Length: 296
Length: 158
Ligand SMILES: Cc1cc2nc3c(=O)[nH]c(=O)nc-3n(C[C@H](O)[C@H](O)[C@H](O)COP(=O)(O)OP(=O)(O)OC[C@H]3O[C@@H](n4cnc5c(N)ncnc54)[C@H](O)[C@@H]3O)c2cc1C
Ligand code: FES
Ligand code: FES
Image (cartoon, rainbow over all chains, first blue to last red):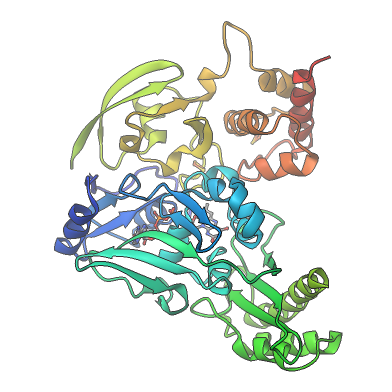
């Protein structure tokens, strides 16, 4: 919602010096304090009056938060505070995780991506999060520091509903980790917005494919859908069709239909439910074609 | 509400101010430091009229807290010209007729400056992409895009 009034409601800005201190503060003030990174979701929700936190805890400077590290054996770890422009421009990301760069590049605008983060995108738990699908098909994990110490949480089981995650009071996500993608993989993110660049997704389809001699079709695909269900979604039946039967144009069409059937979209100002379902089918087919063609 | 003493570099000069927790960089610039070149269009990250350079990178100043600017460097449109010489993107925008009401202009200039700093010879697509976050209700964008191309050409060695 746009408002003519520039002011944010009152809150205290807190800048702890260590992770344990930050975590303890957040746990002690459960329900009235929240961590923030770029604030691009947080400030907008505060301004709208949807959120009423008394404390905003800045966690960008804490240990490891600004690190982007690639290890050829382990994969890519992106610190929570690394902004999306940095992710997109990183040579390691362009070489090994082009799908992640492609998805992040569809988020809003360059100046917004100076603030927006991958971890903020995940923690916000919007079904429209553009980088979440790449995280799902790449089997990403979140690194979390909590009152009981550190743990890792697969992105696949992180979401509980719109805006809801498995995070508990005192939890701080410190990084998102992407294991090494399958060798020779190809990926695609197709986003339908009201205009070519910069809008939130009406529908978003992420596809990743790779050759696998053990699969009956010789290929495996992973798919993720954005903005068409209360949570980001993996249409597993569609994925199974693609690995179980020889790949063909008709097979891609059947998988696209299965993806559309898995979607449970709503009507809103950006698009009707039926339109969204049809667009899931069309974008899934298009994304699969692109990926299949590149796998050769 | 908590107050914070911050020091930052603004258009090359050092600023020391005390700011409340909830003050945005946009408010600090316009309402406290009287630098009204930076515009307030939407206060929601949508329009780009509030774009400034923050440690060299364009950012929506309506989505940055003033307190977060402690120890950082901010450049606003007032800081683009040097030694009474307009920045080449300013000259190019004037010459191309890429300014009508001027409300989007400061943000456009800073986005364009940052684009040319990171990519001195951008393609048409790269220019459009870099200016996605700067909405203009007057010009229809074509003259703005022409201006950015002209500024890039002007910077090339003859
Ligand atoms: C104009 C505009 C356009 C946008 N366009 C898009 C778009 O095209 N696509 C898209 O996907 N999104 C879009 N967004 C939404 C937003 O920019 C993204 O979701 C962004 O990735 C959020 O990152 P952030 O760092 O700014 O998050 P923040 O606002 O800092 O945080 C988001 C949420 O995560 C929680 N959180 C933050 N850090 C942590 C942490 N370390 N540990 C635990 N919880 C944490 C916060 O408490 C909050 O609930 C847009 C937003 C705006 C304002
Ligand atoms: S005022 Fe900041 S983007 Fe519109
Ligand atoms: S010149 Fe009027 S908004 Fe761009």
